[in-house]
Image: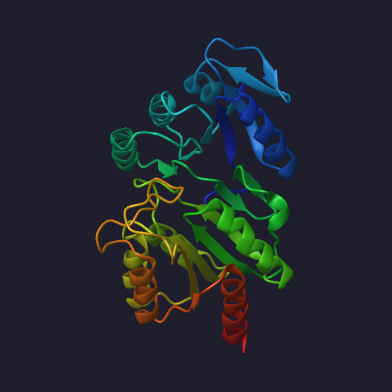
Amino acid sequence: MVVLVNESTRVVVQGITGRQASFHVRRMLDYGTKIVAGVRPGKRGERVHGVPVYDSVEEAVKETGANASIIFVPAPAAPDAFMEAVEAGLDLVVVITEGIPVHDELKMYWRAKESGTIMIGPNTPGVLSVGVAHLGIMPTGAFSRKEGGGVGVVSRSGTLTYQVCQYLSRLGVGQTTVIGVGGDRITGLDFVDVLEMFEEDEETKGVLLIGEIGGTMEEEAAKFIARGFEKPVVAYVAGVTAPPGKKMGHAGAIIEGRRGTAESKIKAFEEAGVPVGRTPLEAAELVKRALESRMK
């Protein structure tokens, strides 16, 4: 079993004729993702890597049976693209776009909740069911699958995800599903949402959670785990040396007053009984140890 995307997921790519989208469509197709349509108004009839292009998501869904979307549309038009995907009845929408204003992200968040559509992102590297399907921009060579199960990975940081998973692969620890929830203040999924999914997935034997400064998503996850999450969890929190008031790469990665520090998040995890790696390599080693202990 994999989480969110599988062999049956039929994907429409919004903004498919752009340079970045075209590059990643080629990579996703090579990975085995079933991309059945692209959308770019005024470009109906064209093809990108053999994928037919339509003028609207509604047309694409009607003619191809698509049930998921990935958005590569620039920030000013991305909120409208998301609303179009929701109106077309798609189950899952991955929003790669960064730089979307917070008030637009709030509208997207609540529209997703109202409709039952799962929104991943914005500002996300996407979701990867390892060895099965990939909706995103992750460097798939960093990830590996292992017969019999592995660790589920949920993260706010794309680059750290790739680094830690490469360490996991070298240590012989396979991954099941890797989900980047996004680095902005408002995201469709949070850590608790994904932990609930991993708890239900029989193939996922443990969880690696990669957090960073800003917000309270990590503290909420720690409370959820402390209430009785049954699988082993290891955490890594980036930003231990980050100065207050300075945004660190992601829109959501900023310390405001005493809230959102790496120290407060690490403390919350440790109080919940979650081991915290001080480096990406140590986090990977802790995951390996936790899974081995569970198997004894």
